[in-house]
Structures are given as structure tokens and as C-alpha cells.
Image (cartoon, rainbow, N blue to C red):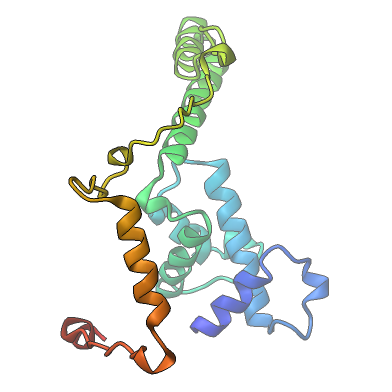
Length: 203
């Protein structure tokens, strides 16, 4: 599976197969089919291990598509985990999904064997985990007050600015205006570019 083929498959992952003839090769269409079936399996069965998925892929996804070798199955898994958000790194949302799905499965199995006490315990855990036993939290909008800005002529409120003690501000302004008004285009010099040696080394 080349990177180019993988990129093509990912680009057309959710397109209908009938529209992909001439766009993807037959091998790439087979790859797309394996990916979609495997992703669906992982989402439907959160406790599916990579080894289970290898067996699934080597069986041709239970005879639905062409069987692959063990090495190809492991290469497929890398792409499948990429599609499902890299389940090996298991995001918090995915872990929540696994816990909920596991509790639902335990509940169903308890019902199937007539263990109503076990089913009730599973529902209790599920209800507490999903906070169904608590009132929905609502935002108290009255607590969200807009910021209040007060105008001030105190420049020390701004970081980095200091009061010019002992100086006539208006006189200083006139001096600066006079200085810059005397400048001509010939007085303007280009700044010298100083090369950062560390940046050169990194690049």
C-alpha cells in the first residue's frame, strides 16, 4: 500500500463505489471496502482488539471482500486507526464511548440470562456515569456580567509606560516636532539586517 494509494482512498472514503470506477483501481476499491467495514466494526464493537481485526481482515471481512495477508492486515490497521482518530491513543471521548457500550453490553447479557439484578446494576452504573440521576445543569446568565471599563489619564496603568517626572511635557512635544520636521529624505537610513546565527543553524 503506497502513500499515494492511501491518500486517494482516504480522499474518496465516503464516496459511492459506483462513482469511483476510473478514479480508483480495483485494489484501491478493495482497500476502501476493507477500511469501511473495519471502521464500522470498531465503532459497533468498541472492545475489538487489533488481533481481532487482523483475523477479520485475513478472512476477507467475513467473506465480504478479498482476503489479505497478515502483513497487509497490520498495514491496514494503521490506516484504520488513523481514520477512527487513532484509537491506540484513545481520546477521552472514545473511552467514554467504550464505557457506555460496555455497560450496555453487560445489561443485555444480564437480561438474556434472566439476571434482572445484574441488569439493574448495569443500568444503575450507566445512569450514574451518564449523570442521568442528576438534574441538567443550566447556565445562570445573570452571573455573566460584561466587563466595566473606566477611562483614566493615568498612563502607569499601562505596562511599560512611566511618568516623565520633572519634565515639561508640552516643551518635550515641541522639541520632538521640531526635530522630525527638520529631517529630510537624505537623513533617513535603512536599518542593517542582523542575521540570527541560531535561526540559520536550525534551518
